[in-house]
View 1 (tube, one colour):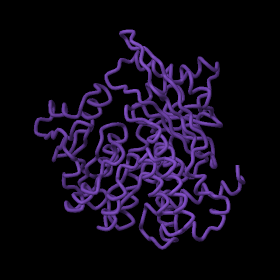
View 2 (cartoon, helix red, strand yellow):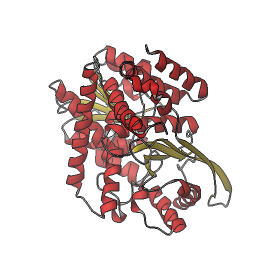
View 3 (tube, rainbow, N blue to C red):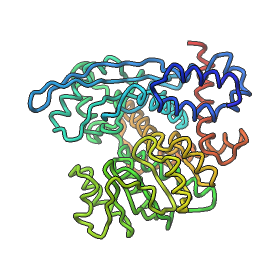
View 4 (tube, rainbow, N blue to C red):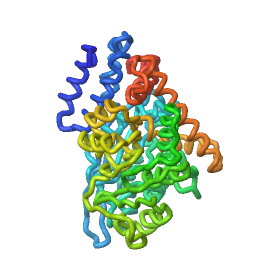
Length: 446
């Protein structure tokens, strides 16, 4: 960072959030990219735009009390952060996972602001969730937790103010329970107050597939820009949730061979190519671990606690969680000839890892751009709800593809404009920043 103003903002953010390393990491990566823009934009310091962007507009923390099937009472902590509403109502998912805390929520909400900006849609950035762990819980336990969570959340959301969606641990089942309690509490059938709903009652087609599909569409654009294609490439995909499964599906549809995926306990490697229908049954229907893939595919390999990035590949798609590609992992990917890394998860590569990949000529698609497909289709779901419309799968998929294409163009445009051609990290951060900044300037200091 060269701008004294940007450096001073980073010092303030670091001092103010000393126990939130993920948030500080996200802010540092962002500020390093926008530094050259701020130096040529006097309004940034005049309106103190950068510091304002780094502080949430609101943070709500609340207690969630629920009882399990043995009538034991549990207490969890719930969160909802509205980070920036310059472009529209807060929009971002709810995450139910034991690692959730305020720092995690702030990093996710901060990233969401600029990801949402890149879509070109009128949505601000927010995030929420709880340290509740749904793994191993019955449907009734999850229902009771969701109802208790919504007993407080409903006061803070609305289709013109804050629209939550799903994230890790929150799928259409949980959204259904949350919406049912919202409807009960408010006596209103506001479909557009939550997205990620079931297709039968207001959900959008392609929503489940959107983040994974969008990530692959972005990767395809990156390859096309250097006169390459997905066809025939060998890919590995970390994770085995929605994002990973539908990244695998779209990669296979476009001619790539996906040989590995993972969960928190290890990874499976199938050199002949993963059997996606079997994986979807295993993860979405039976809710089992990836190790059980070997029960029906004995020639595949399972490595407990293994690091999936050690598998040689052309393309790598981190679709699990934050900071899963370290500096060491990046060096391994480079050594094994990886040509492209495209982020399906939120901030899955450390800043040191990104530097290694870029210095070695690996095409790198940052999460702000590459995983924006999920929130884009969430916004399309809101549009359908407002007009009581039902678009076809093909129609939504085409719109998603076009949005990802435009995000790719935006990244290249701003990277080149600020003397960093081909740097998708710089292009994504600058493009996301400028749209938010112009809106904040137009609204005045509020």
